[in-house]
Length: 337
Image 1 (cartoon, rainbow, N blue to C red):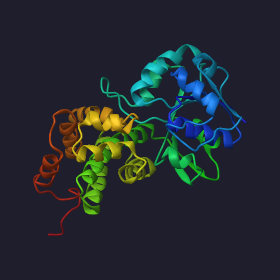
Image 2: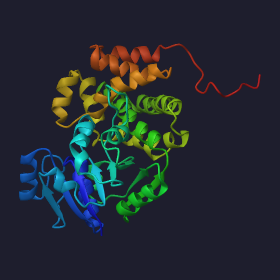
Image 3: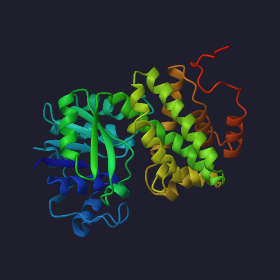
Image 4: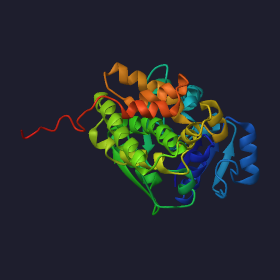
């Protein structure tokens, strides 16, 4: 049994606290919102964000960040990506040398273009930072449905420790040394999922969805490889797998926000209706900036940015994607004649 703290009490943090408790670990959940901790202590269920998932007696709650970090084998960073750096800075004085922090959020910082693991490492240099990511909706993990995910870390022993802590008969964990590739796949697929949701909102069909997923993966892979990520990561669970589930699932907040925009709502109206942080909106500008920095063409990401920040009509963006210059699907493949 290990002592573990979940930093953040959103749907994913709560689902993971349920999973880890079922694995026999002692779990302490922290939230920056005092009312949220009071509610969880009283109800032992997050009825707004993860209804129906009851939290057992091995899970406790705290408003004290120092208490959450103290004497824990593992700290799970589950706050929304826009609060990762701020929360990490607040944790710094409470984290011991070599203490493991596992980032489970997904995003890229707009001002620095850094992935979340890099932000945590900048703020808490004494920590050993790992990433846990893949095609995983909290609503299904909290119901014990079979799920697979990837634990990535620079050191093999760190990744294998995370694998051991989280693995169960319904939660299969693979390991990877490609932290950058895993982080990029996780963040960039949210931008493509916005586009997939927009297509659904417009009433387009399976052909359109398949095109967006496939060409979106090509964009993610081009950028990720240019930045130093491994091609295998983008064709695996944290690339293709996460992209499919986020573009297609009714649980996806990014797809839902895109769907509402496709139906005519503004980005702000869509995010207000979703009522949770829509990570793709916050990663879209960073993705476009990275594409320009590395000289990578990302037409889907570019059109999503125009829709989000330039008031471009969704139908016009789709039309421009369809009328781009004619190309070969795989330019590296040779012709026989």
